[in-house]
Amino acid sequence: MFFKQSKSQKNTFIAAICSSLFVCSCANDTATNSVTQVENSAYSSPSITNANALYCPKGSENVQLDLTNIQLIREQNIPLMYQGYNNIEGPVWHDGALYYSNMGSHQPDKSGFELSNQTTIWRWEPGSKPQVWMEDTAAGTNGLALNSKGNLVATRQLDGSLSTIDWITQQVTPMVSTYHNKRFNSPNDLTISYDDTVYFTDPNWNTPSNINIADTQGGGQPGSIKSGQRIYRVTANGKVNATKVTELVPALRDKPNGIILSLDQQQIIVGGLQGLWAFDLNSGEVSNPQKLLDTPIDGLGKDCSGNIYVTTTRETPERIDGQFVVILDKLYQEIGKLKVSGIHIVTNIAFGGDDGKTLFVTGLTAPMDGNKLRQCGDKACLKAGIYTAKLNVQGFPF
Image (cartoon, rainbow, N blue to C red; front, side):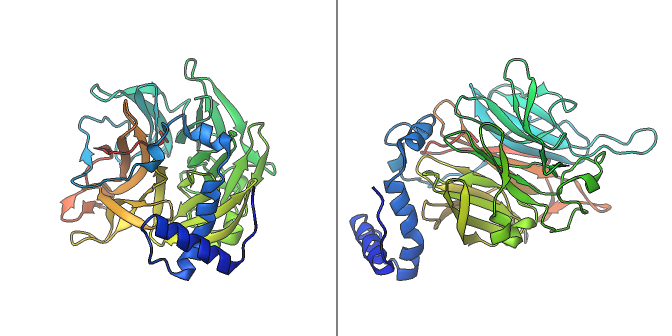
């Protein structure tokens, strides 16, 4: 049963909750902003609970993250497909292996044309060498995720589609590839709700160089923040609508990127070049934006306790663009961060391993900065790669 409360009632309610959890010192404004999440969590539907149970055993929501002595370790012998720029993106854990997109550009052909932003999917069983699972002539993916049936769902910049990919045959089946008769720009990241509704971001970068950008939603050069960069909602039967995310927060037109649902699926969190916002979510409609971070955001992940993992930039003594995974709790308070050493840009997050407690973090590198070797601090940047850490909490595989 839902009930409507006044602001003062809400403050009283959240104060009582804080007291019982020994986390008082909640200011009225903070309480007002946070109470919706507490209330919604209390009324999370059985369908959402069942969906979370696919990855989170009973009781895992009560485990407190412990980052004591936790460091991200760079995995060795991760091969790269392309010469020069390589971006590892979209990690997803499935059936004992990590699948991920390796994005890059082919060398110029005889006429000098360089085909950019192609993507191969790799499969990696930790302890063995990664193997190409799907060539870039067929894959062309960025974000990878799983629906409620364990099917692979991908955002594909190759053809501008949201598609499913069969695990056995590798057949690609588009769910949707246009909006108002124009191709999506370059579908980037995605999150999937309990009823298999997909939300995805569609910035106007990473569009392959053989696509006429005048035919895409953005309709402008990379760098433009025209209204064609949006966040879309696609139902399980393929009906697509543009959400109001970029109307409510025009700053998210500047390369919308990482996207994830809160643990109770009552909020959706979206990041871009200008920061990170959370929106209330009700029957697919977004409202009440709340800014969480003001640094550039790439990928997002979450654990079974409801913590959100954010790949972003922080200044360090070594470099102004130090790369980090910042962790926010379910009330979006920062509770820790993990440094990603030596990498140009940290990109995305997934949990996996036999017990779901291994954190996988991906990163990209463009080795040249103009005509100079790109530096990460006082040393040349490492090549694109994968970093891991063993945590005490379980998490979601995409």
